[in-house]
Amino acid sequence: MYASGGDELAEALQALHEALQRLEEAVSRLRDEAIRDPLTGAFNRRFLDARLVEELARAERYGVPFGLLLLDLDDFKRYNDRHGHLAGDRLLAELAVLWRSALRQADELFRFGGDEFVILLPHTPRAAALETAGRLQELTRRADGRTSLSVGVASWPEDGRTPEALVAAADRSLYRTKRPGGAEERPAPAGARTSPAGALEVSVGYGSDPPAPSCIWIGGRAVRVLAVEPVEGEPESVTFLTEEGRWTLPRRVLRLPPPPA
Image 1 (cartoon, rainbow, N blue to C red):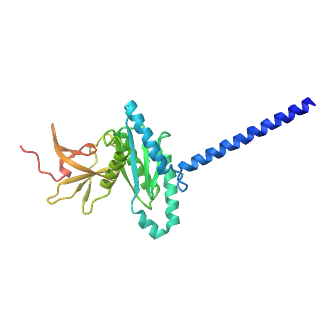
Image 2 (image 1 turned 120 degrees about the vertical axis):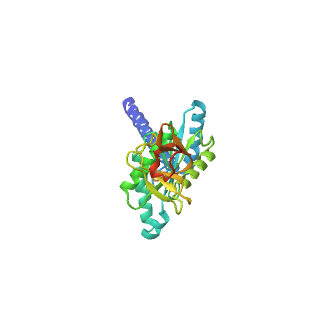
Image 3 (image 1 turned 135 degrees about the vertical axis):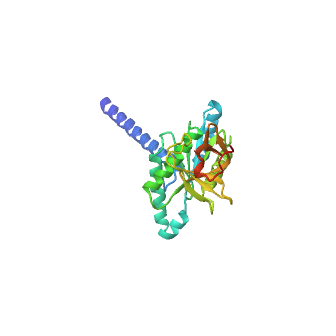
């Protein structure tokens, strides 16, 4: 009799344990669904707001940099108009998987809205964030011939110390990556030196008459030129001072006058 009662109690406890496990799994699924975009599997914008607050607090406390990338597909509306919205949805889902595959485990992809995405890069200085941006653009270009990718870059603390300031800085950077009308692109010669992101393709844009460098295309992104300076000891080269660092190229490709004798 006691043995039978003990068996019944054990069975009841086992059933309760299994019910609690199912409840925990259901809560976990609901929590994940609440922070995910159902189309792409990326985190949603609401979760981005929370993560930005957390990452800013961590950065302020420990003084570690982090980067924010704002991704935008070029001419996505035209793609939707030509192929239909279902094809556009499939493209977004495929690209989200592709981008996640190229990120570190600590990096996070968020769908910001429409065809715009945000990537948080913890413990990442600006130079490394720029390299990641260029890598994602190249990956998109090689893996998908249907569209191209523009990326805006913002860094803590250089570009702001609030979520609003960082997103706004990334948005301004993204706007600058869109090629201005009438700008002329000229390829840099073989052997031209670049910044630490040296693997990226570099070319020069001209936007005035007489022609003068107005921007540098770095892996397909336009970076505004602030000044052009001579290189000490190398009269045949000049350095661009840009919003994202210094880039050195031979003078002969810039159509600049020779240095004074």
